[in-house]
Image (cartoon, rainbow, N blue to C red; front, side, top):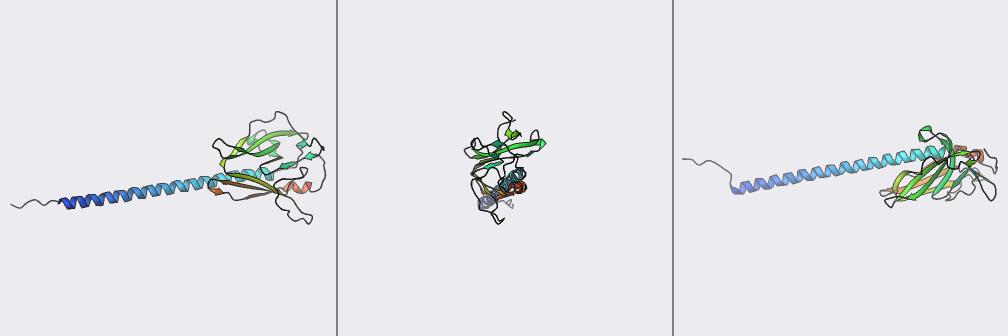
Length: 213
Protein backbone atom coordinates (compact mmCIF):
# COMPACT_ATOMS: atom_id res chain seq x y z
CA UNK A 1 0.00 0.00 0.00
CA UNK A 2 1.41 3.45 -1.03
CA UNK A 3 2.05 5.95 1.80
CA UNK A 4 0.34 9.41 1.58
CA UNK A 5 2.71 12.20 0.52
CA UNK A 6 3.42 14.97 3.09
CA UNK A 7 5.84 17.74 4.04
CA UNK A 8 9.06 17.05 5.80
CA UNK A 9 9.99 18.99 8.93
CA UNK A 10 12.68 20.84 6.97
CA UNK A 11 10.13 21.98 4.37
CA UNK A 12 7.75 23.22 7.08
CA UNK A 13 10.54 25.17 8.81
CA UNK A 14 11.65 26.67 5.49
CA UNK A 15 8.08 27.72 4.59
CA UNK A 16 7.58 29.24 8.06
CA UNK A 17 10.83 31.22 7.76
CA UNK A 18 9.86 32.54 4.33
CA UNK A 19 6.40 33.54 5.61
CA UNK A 20 7.91 35.33 8.61
CA UNK A 21 10.37 37.19 6.36
CA UNK A 22 7.59 38.22 4.00
CA UNK A 23 5.44 39.47 6.89
CA UNK A 24 8.37 41.41 8.39
CA UNK A 25 9.06 43.00 5.00
CA UNK A 26 5.38 43.88 4.63
CA UNK A 27 5.21 45.49 8.07
CA UNK A 28 8.43 47.43 7.42
CA UNK A 29 6.99 48.69 4.13
CA UNK A 30 3.79 49.77 5.87
CA UNK A 31 5.73 51.57 8.62
CA UNK A 32 7.89 53.35 6.06
CA UNK A 33 4.83 54.40 4.08
CA UNK A 34 3.10 55.67 7.25
CA UNK A 35 6.22 57.60 8.30
CA UNK A 36 6.48 59.13 4.83
CA UNK A 37 2.83 60.14 4.93
CA UNK A 38 3.27 61.69 8.39
CA UNK A 39 6.32 63.64 7.24
CA UNK A 40 4.40 64.84 4.22
CA UNK A 41 1.50 65.96 6.40
CA UNK A 42 3.88 67.75 8.78
CA UNK A 43 5.57 69.57 5.88
CA UNK A 44 2.22 70.54 4.38
CA UNK A 45 0.96 71.76 7.76
CA UNK A 46 4.12 73.83 8.31
CA UNK A 47 3.91 75.33 4.82
CA UNK A 48 0.28 76.29 5.41
CA UNK A 49 1.21 77.84 8.73
CA UNK A 50 3.98 79.89 7.11
CA UNK A 51 1.66 81.01 4.32
CA UNK A 52 -1.15 82.04 6.68
CA UNK A 53 1.11 83.99 9.07
CA UNK A 54 3.01 85.64 6.20
CA UNK A 55 -0.19 86.69 4.44
CA UNK A 56 -1.57 88.18 7.66
CA UNK A 57 1.64 90.11 8.37
CA UNK A 58 1.88 91.33 4.78
CA UNK A 59 -1.66 92.72 4.83
CA UNK A 60 -1.42 94.29 8.27
CA UNK A 61 2.06 95.85 7.87
CA UNK A 62 1.43 96.91 4.28
CA UNK A 63 -1.72 98.68 5.43
CA UNK A 64 0.08 101.00 7.86
CA UNK A 65 -1.48 104.45 7.42
CA UNK A 66 0.83 106.78 9.28
CA UNK A 67 -1.93 107.93 11.63
CA UNK A 68 -0.64 109.41 14.88
CA UNK A 69 -1.33 107.13 17.85
CA UNK A 70 0.71 108.84 20.57
CA UNK A 71 2.74 111.96 21.41
CA UNK A 72 6.23 111.75 22.83
CA UNK A 73 5.90 113.03 26.42
CA UNK A 74 9.30 114.69 26.27
CA UNK A 75 9.28 116.39 22.88
CA UNK A 76 5.62 116.36 21.91
CA UNK A 77 6.58 114.73 18.60
CA UNK A 78 3.96 112.59 16.90
CA UNK A 79 4.41 108.84 16.81
CA UNK A 80 3.29 107.12 13.62
CA UNK A 81 5.52 104.05 13.71
CA UNK A 82 7.59 102.48 16.46
CA UNK A 83 9.75 99.44 15.88
CA UNK A 84 12.66 97.53 17.30
CA UNK A 85 13.98 94.00 16.89
CA UNK A 86 11.20 92.38 18.92
CA UNK A 87 8.19 94.69 18.59
CA UNK A 88 6.49 97.27 16.42
CA UNK A 89 3.43 99.53 16.62
CA UNK A 90 1.49 101.34 13.92
CA UNK A 91 -2.07 102.17 12.92
CA UNK A 92 -3.91 100.37 10.12
CA UNK A 93 -7.52 99.62 9.27
CA UNK A 94 -8.80 96.55 11.02
CA UNK A 95 -11.10 94.30 8.98
CA UNK A 96 -14.55 93.80 10.49
CA UNK A 97 -13.95 90.07 10.94
CA UNK A 98 -11.11 90.85 13.38
CA UNK A 99 -13.00 93.34 15.52
CA UNK A 100 -14.94 96.57 15.28
CA UNK A 101 -13.12 97.68 12.13
CA UNK A 102 -11.66 101.10 11.35
CA UNK A 103 -8.20 102.44 12.23
CA UNK A 104 -6.69 100.60 15.18
CA UNK A 105 -3.27 100.38 16.73
CA UNK A 106 -1.51 97.16 15.74
CA UNK A 107 1.02 96.08 18.36
CA UNK A 108 3.22 93.13 17.42
CA UNK A 109 5.57 91.55 19.91
CA UNK A 110 7.41 88.41 20.95
CA UNK A 111 6.68 86.51 24.17
CA UNK A 112 7.65 83.27 25.84
CA UNK A 113 5.07 80.57 25.21
CA UNK A 114 3.79 77.79 27.45
CA UNK A 115 6.08 75.22 25.81
CA UNK A 116 9.20 77.32 26.31
CA UNK A 117 9.40 78.53 22.72
CA UNK A 118 8.63 81.99 21.41
CA UNK A 119 5.18 83.20 20.40
CA UNK A 120 4.54 85.92 17.81
CA UNK A 121 1.81 88.07 19.36
CA UNK A 122 -0.52 90.78 18.10
CA UNK A 123 -2.88 93.14 19.93
CA UNK A 124 -5.38 95.66 18.55
CA UNK A 125 -6.52 98.87 20.26
CA UNK A 126 -8.72 101.71 19.08
CA UNK A 127 -7.18 105.08 18.20
CA UNK A 128 -8.96 108.43 18.20
CA UNK A 129 -7.62 111.97 18.00
CA UNK A 130 -4.00 110.88 17.95
CA UNK A 131 -4.33 108.79 21.11
CA UNK A 132 -4.93 105.18 21.99
CA UNK A 133 -8.23 104.95 23.84
CA UNK A 134 -7.76 103.81 27.42
CA UNK A 135 -9.34 100.43 28.05
CA UNK A 136 -10.01 99.89 24.35
CA UNK A 137 -8.32 96.51 24.15
CA UNK A 138 -11.15 94.17 23.22
CA UNK A 139 -9.13 91.06 24.03
CA UNK A 140 -5.64 90.14 25.25
CA UNK A 141 -2.75 89.68 22.82
CA UNK A 142 -3.26 86.72 20.51
CA UNK A 143 -0.60 84.33 19.22
CA UNK A 144 -0.15 84.35 15.46
CA UNK A 145 2.44 81.58 15.64
CA UNK A 146 3.62 79.51 18.59
CA UNK A 147 6.68 77.52 19.63
CA UNK A 148 9.12 79.46 17.45
CA UNK A 149 12.90 79.64 17.84
CA UNK A 150 13.42 83.20 16.64
CA UNK A 151 11.40 86.25 15.57
CA UNK A 152 13.15 89.43 14.44
CA UNK A 153 11.93 92.64 12.82
CA UNK A 154 14.08 95.06 10.80
CA UNK A 155 13.35 98.35 9.02
CA UNK A 156 14.76 100.56 6.32
CA UNK A 157 14.04 103.88 4.70
CA UNK A 158 15.34 105.79 1.71
CA UNK A 159 18.71 107.49 1.36
CA UNK A 160 19.19 111.01 0.02
CA UNK A 161 19.49 109.53 -3.49
CA UNK A 162 16.13 107.77 -3.17
CA UNK A 163 17.89 104.45 -2.80
CA UNK A 164 17.22 101.95 -0.05
CA UNK A 165 19.17 102.43 3.15
CA UNK A 166 20.57 99.56 5.22
CA UNK A 167 18.39 97.34 7.35
CA UNK A 168 18.16 98.66 10.91
CA UNK A 169 17.09 96.85 14.07
CA UNK A 170 15.52 100.00 15.48
CA UNK A 171 13.37 102.52 13.62
CA UNK A 172 14.80 105.85 14.78
CA UNK A 173 12.19 108.41 13.67
CA UNK A 174 8.69 107.51 14.87
CA UNK A 175 7.23 110.48 12.95
CA UNK A 176 7.90 108.66 9.68
CA UNK A 177 7.01 105.27 8.26
CA UNK A 178 9.77 102.93 7.09
CA UNK A 179 9.74 102.13 3.41
CA UNK A 180 10.09 98.41 4.08
CA UNK A 181 9.77 96.05 7.04
CA UNK A 182 11.50 92.67 7.17
CA UNK A 183 10.27 89.81 9.35
CA UNK A 184 12.56 86.84 10.02
CA UNK A 185 11.14 83.76 11.72
CA UNK A 186 12.53 80.30 12.45
CA UNK A 187 11.08 77.24 14.13
CA UNK A 188 12.35 73.78 15.09
CA UNK A 189 12.54 72.79 11.41
CA UNK A 190 14.57 75.81 10.34
CA UNK A 191 14.18 79.32 9.00
CA UNK A 192 11.05 80.53 7.24
CA UNK A 193 11.47 82.50 4.00
CA UNK A 194 12.22 86.15 4.82
CA UNK A 195 9.11 88.31 4.60
CA UNK A 196 9.77 91.81 3.20
CA UNK A 197 6.77 94.14 3.16
CA UNK A 198 6.60 97.52 1.40
CA UNK A 199 4.62 100.30 3.08
CA UNK A 200 2.87 102.29 0.31
CA UNK A 201 2.04 105.19 2.65
CA UNK A 202 5.68 105.76 3.59
CA UNK A 203 6.11 108.33 0.83
CA UNK A 204 3.53 110.59 2.48
CA UNK A 205 5.83 111.02 5.48
CA UNK A 206 9.20 111.20 3.78
CA UNK A 207 9.96 114.64 5.22
CA UNK A 208 10.36 115.72 8.81
CA UNK A 209 6.89 117.16 9.10
CA UNK A 210 4.97 116.74 12.31
CA UNK A 211 1.39 117.30 11.25
CA UNK A 212 -1.07 115.02 12.98
CA UNK A 213 -3.52 113.11 10.84
